[in-house]
Image (cartoon, rainbow, N blue to C red):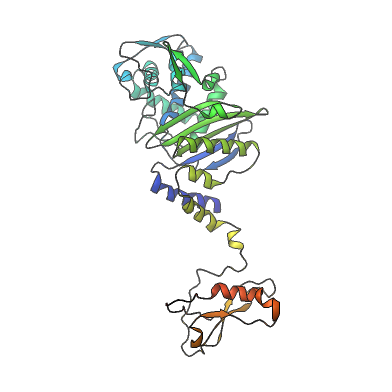
Length: 383
């Protein structure tokens, strides 16, 4: 409950910076155990991670024999006019299924995704219905597709939890095709097409999957990596920068392989949440922060001082002291006469000499002392 409350609170801070929200999850491929998750069920725009479902249905058609890997697919004006990134296909041309696959995996080509959508669904709109239906079959209950590419659409939504299910299904259901996700570049019609997944160049054992970005979604990434025969799948959604996204994914996977927890604040910071705001939320529920011996109650109302009480009367505050009974009252400050300038000073201690400078009672009193200024000293209350 405590961790959940912190993540919800962090999400509130995110809404100021990133309207699309953020989330992250890491799954052990062997056991299916959730290794790490932050906002796993928050709906976010998938951007080009959408193409993972387009590829799923493409692999499904290849497996069933409906498509052949070298089959030529027609390019419509609808596909050719898609916004970048794309392969630059023209209306009336044809393109091989394999080139569509490679174009989607590497350059995240929107025209190639639309070609496959029209080839399998007759229209992109109908193909989007097929995508959503397949999502339900895979247990992706919070995902809705309206196009095959991931171009901006307010109704196109997913979650980190749903996307990691899709990533795992691609490797589980089509092991013969999973090698495509490790492709970093390919030659298309004489031109070298380079991939966007730069983390694969730097992270040992990473062999897929897919990047994504739109202004509404932020920077997204689905990844899988193997270390000592142990495979993990991870998804990061809604990061503010590509570099921050990649750094977060690397940390999540490292911690996953080492059986350690990744601090939730790192996921929030990657999404653009201000560090001070994120830390305040976590500090509010931190067991370390709430275990300070001399922390005074912040929520208890402070009654007004009785004007008939002597100004020199000792002021006591209830606090826990390991040297006294639980809840015992301890004198920590004393109101002085007007000649002292109206400041509160430390209470006297029965032990004199060198001990006086280190006396914990004097230290606490000093903390409560009001610094000399022209302002009126605060009224200390008797509890």
